[in-house]
Image (tube, rainbow, N blue to C red; front, side):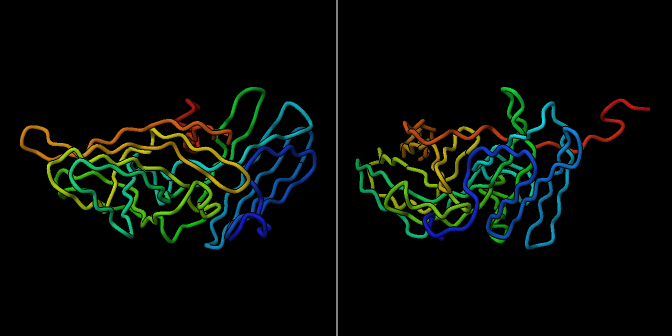
Length: 249
């Protein structure tokens, strides 16, 4: 699915005066003007999921932005942690370090742009088959994570459009022995996502393997990257307001 040959929509801002159709892998979005300063937003996918919303506006135009977002909403919003299982483990001898690029899952967010506000309107995934959870640790006290089988790639240019982004991991082994690293678990809520065209990159993380008292640990910290790609807004999951939520009798 190369960016050059793709007929799918690109990430970015769209201004609608009458109608707009956007196609992504397995998903189609249709926006129509249905009245004075009122637009209809409809999304359907290959699994027969359908979302429809009416959007009143203060002008004759509707502006939206479509961006890659953190993979925290599908199959449900349950955790901020991502578990990347590396297809090929990395071996570090004692005192050594390495930096690798890996693929990390993303989802896609749709925002309604109103004046200077970016309102979370909708979100979806183009990879529902791989949207799954796993438990890191024991059943009693483990951490629920978004699971992803990750490949090591050569550069930031090697993401699969609409499905994943590329993340750089800097590994440092401070232990007095060699170790094999086959998984990385971290809270992705601390990492920003950036986009250009149909590709996405994610803030880096550093992983320090060290000994704390008698326990060997891996300390993971986010690290902002410098890029001219556009930064995605933070997506806030919006629940449908019910009568009791609005205080209506």
